[in-house]
Image 1 (tube, one colour):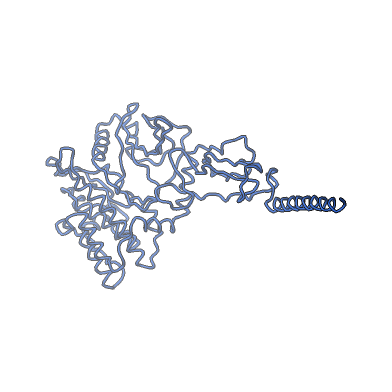
Image 2 (spheres, one colour):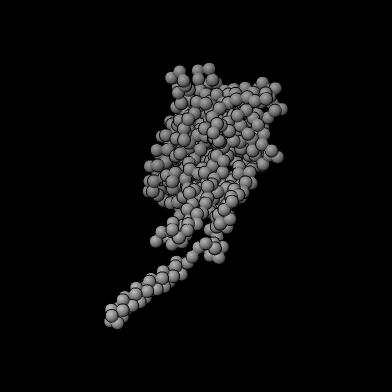
Length: 450
C-alpha cells in the first residue's frame, strides 16, 4: 500500500481526505479522518465515485447497489462499510481502514519448507475467508428474510491480511443479492477472468458455490506457487477455466492427496459436485490438513507475517505515522532537562506529557538520593492512532521506539552522585562524633582539675 499525500487536506462531508490510496474504473480510494467532538478522530478509507461518472445513471446505480449490499454485512472477516453518503454532488463510501498487506504481497513470502507451515498458513487464511463468505451467503435482511449475497469477484486482490492476522474480504462492488427477481443472469460478466467460475463465464445463474470455486483457485495457487488458469490471452484463459485438467498438488503422500481431493471438489466444473456451503468447504480443509496440524489461528498468522514481512509492515506504519502526524515535533517546554533527556520521537509523532522533576535534598528518597525522574506518560501518539512500543502488537499500528539517549551526568547540575553523598554524610557523622568526644573529654578534665 502506497500513500500519495494530497497537497492539502480536502473536506468531504464529515471527513477530511489526507492521501490517495488507489483508483479504479469507477472510483478512487482515499485515506481520510473523521473529526468529531472533543478531539475525536478516526482513520477511515473513503471510496469516492469519480466526478466524471456522477451523471452516468448506470455507474450511479452500481455504486448505490454496492453501498446497500455492504450495509447488510457485519462480520470480522469482511471489510466494514460505515456509511454511504453524498457531498458536493459526489457519492462516497466510508469504510474500515485496514493496516496490513494484501494477499498477493504475503503469499510470495511464505516459505516452501517446512511444508507444514505452508499448509497450515494457507488453510488458516482460507478458513477465515470462508467464514466471511458464509456470512455473506447466509445474511438476513432487516425484514427477517434471507438475502444471500454472492461476492462474484473472489480473487487474491480482494483478500487482505491485517496486522492482527485477520483475513478480510474486500470489495463487494460486483456482488449480487439472490432474491426471487434476481436469480437470472444480467448478461454481463463480472469479476476477474482467471478466477471466474464456469457458470459465470457462461452467464448462467450463480449461487454460493461460484464463490467457492474462485476461493479454491486462490488456495491452490498459494499452495503450488503459480497461477492455475491465467494464460496469455482472454480466450486461452477462458478455455483453461472451462476445460483444462486441474494439476495435482505437489507431493505423493496421503496427506497431500487428501488436501488435493478437497480442492478438486471445490473446483468441480459442475456446481452440484462442489461443497454446498463455504463452511462445509472450510470443515473439509480442516480435516484434510489435520495431519499437518490444525490451520493457523489469527494470532499465529500475525506472528508469521510479522516474521516474514516485518520490515514492510514497519515501513508502512512509519509512513502512515508521518502522514497522519503532519510532521509535528516534540512539544517545546520550559524545562531544559526534559528536552535533553526525553526520547527522540519518530517523524510525525509526538510525546505526550513527558516531564522530568529534579528534587532537592529534602525531597529525595533513600532509593534515589538527590534526583527523581517522573515520566507521567510517554506513550507515542498520533491523532486517531495509537502506536505500541514493540513491533507486532495486535490491534495497533506498530513502530520501533528509538533508544533513549545516554544520560549525561554533567547536564544535570543539581544532581549529586549517590557515592559522593554517602561520603559527605560519613564525614559529617565523623565530625559530630569527634565533637561529642571532645566535649566529653573537656568535662572529664575539668572535674579532675577541680
